[in-house]
Amino acid sequence: MKTRMILVTAIVGLCAVAVILREATAGPETRDAAVDSITLLTTLSVLAHDSMEGRAAGSPGGARARRYLTRALADAGVLPLDGTFEHAFDLGERGTGVNILGLVPGSAEGPHIVLSAHYDHEGIRDGDIFNGADDNASGVAAVMEIARLLVLEPPLHPIIIALFDDEEQGLGGARHFVTDPPIALDDIALNVNLDMVSRAEGELWAGGAHHTPALRPVLEAVAADAPLDLRLGHDRPGATEGADWTMQSDHGAFHEQGIPFVYFGVEDHPDYHRPTDDFERVDPADFLASARTILLAVRALDAHPLPLRREAP
Image (cartoon, rainbow, N blue to C red; front, side, top):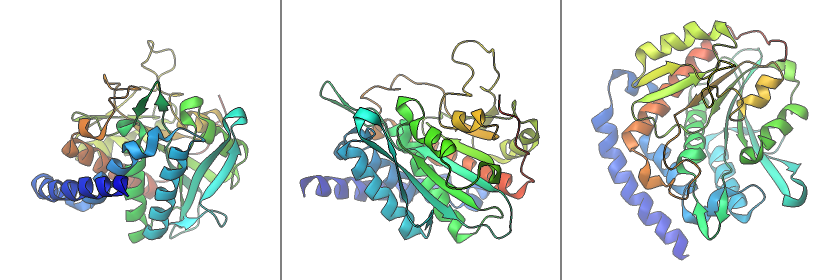
């Protein structure tokens, strides 16, 4: 009960700030994007709260986060995939991982887009809670808000909402998804993956166009209208250490199967994989601009002819 009251108090204060923020930052392009700052920031604050205990795969905190997310998806009108949001897989000695999978039907027949983010993080280590606000409560919060908006204004292509577990231990949830897929892999045309998107400081990266050049003009058009600096890159093999993010998050599992991807993320920061990656370190206006940019990209990619699947590398 004490934890719940702390959460409620934090969210009430957050909502007041968010209302002011929404009015202060809304321009023509951001109003069109329609991302709601209150729901976006509330989801981030809940997932990154100490009560989630760092959301480690197979942990009680991870299960607590999962219950919150599945309720929110159902409330938003996202359909469970194959009759259930929860899709379990084996973690060996660590127990059971669970991917959260939903569906937003498209208005036309066609291949699927997978919109993904991982909800797990590092858990508790040496008594410190690794809340993972940027990594990756931010990506999950953005996916949840985009999913809500997709239900309200249906996409052209059906979109699978995938919140993956066990990313931190080697893309475990995403690898399970592509090796035991809920739909045929040939019916998946694109993965749009979000991992660390709240600490942009005015600059967000989109990777994937190097591997699939047909994506470049779509992303460049989005960049021209984005409320922050959307830069293309971090996807060239052979780049200097740390510069190629092709295999740095769950999109890597799709890339290995020859499925094109767009990865949205920010540069590493001093709180990366540290117990200081907390909600309080996130600039709300920065995160809001990032989420709005990603929504613009999802809409643009959905409206564009989807790229053909490549040969697996």
